[in-house]
View 1: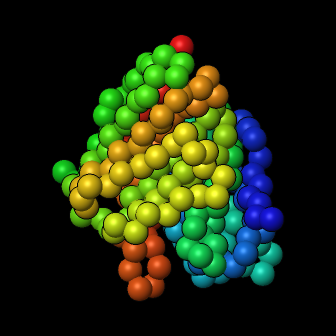
View 2: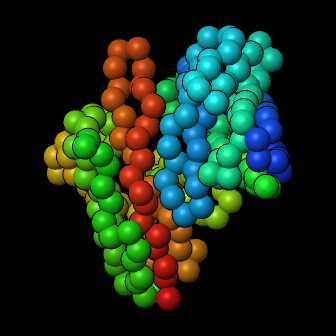
Length: 109
Length: 115
C-alpha cells in the first residue's frame, strides 16, 4: 500500500529552528509537496521537490532524498504565526496526491 | 485576484437531508478536486475532474455525487448525509500539463455539520 509518515505533533520555541520529517512509500514518484494548514483553514502550498537536494524559500527550506524515500521541511526564525499543521504529500505514478496526516507544530514564546 | 471560492463556508444540514456544496474558480485550471477532511486527518480525495472527465475514487461512498457544468464551477452533492459525513470539504484546482500536475490551489473549505 501507499504510505506517508510524519510525526503527529512537534513543539518549538519562537525564534528557533525546527525540522519536520516525512517518509514515504508510494507506487512511483512524481514529486513531493509541503503544505501549511492553519486550524479551520484550507492548506496553502509551501514547496515542491522533484529532484534530490534542498530547495530554499525564505525562512522555509525543503529537502528530498528519493533513494531514501525521505523529505524534511526546515523552518527557521520561527514566528508565532507558524503554528499550524504541515502536510507532506507525494504524487504517485498516476499523478495522484497521497497525503500524510500532517504534523501539528506548536510554537511557544 | 484569481482564486478558488467555496460557498457556503459553514453548512448545517439534518440527518438524511440532501445538501449541495459549491466551488468556483477564476484560475482557469482544467483539474478540479473535492476532498473530505476530518479533524487531524489527511485530506481524503473524493473525486476529481480533468476537464469534463470525471474520476471517482474507489472508496468514495455512493452517497456522494459531483457535477462540473463548466470549467469554472463544480458541485458536491451529498444525497443522504449521515453523522459520519460531518467534516471540512475542500475544493482544489490545478493545471495539468504534459509534464504532470502542478501544485493544487485550495478554496477556504465548507465545514459541514449534520444534526
